[in-house]
Length: 157
Image 1: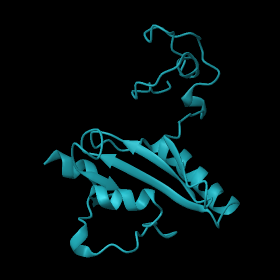
Image 2: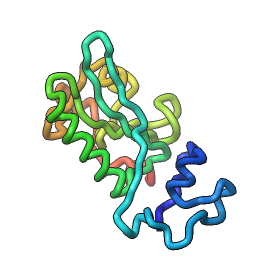
Image 3: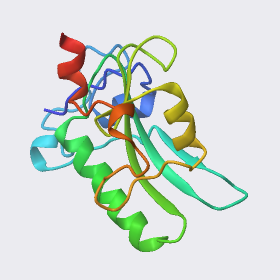
Image 4: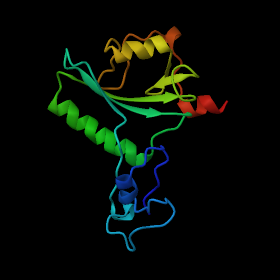
């Protein structure tokens, strides 16, 4: 069965895709022809961040409360990431998983691709001054500036 979205952004169409009645309790279709058990999946893209003056852009997947993307979401986003690199290698700057300990940069820790950063480093990323390479290495980071860790494990303690 298709997993229910828990992002609070459900629209009538997103409920329909997930075979949920607008009451979010009952199913719409019996023997759903687009069930995830048949291989179908959907995910949204949280942000496409762009500087319209330079043409530079990247994709952001935001997670709050130290959540991690589900396997299917990672697979879809990584697929789009590979396509974007081939389609626009000059301007496309990658896929960034930004994880907040709570809800935003003002109320807790921040991780970018599992590297703990401060608000200034996040702002540098958003200004395209701190961009990762193809191997997911974030250049310009001094060891004393960050702690590399899995965000959820860091939040658990």
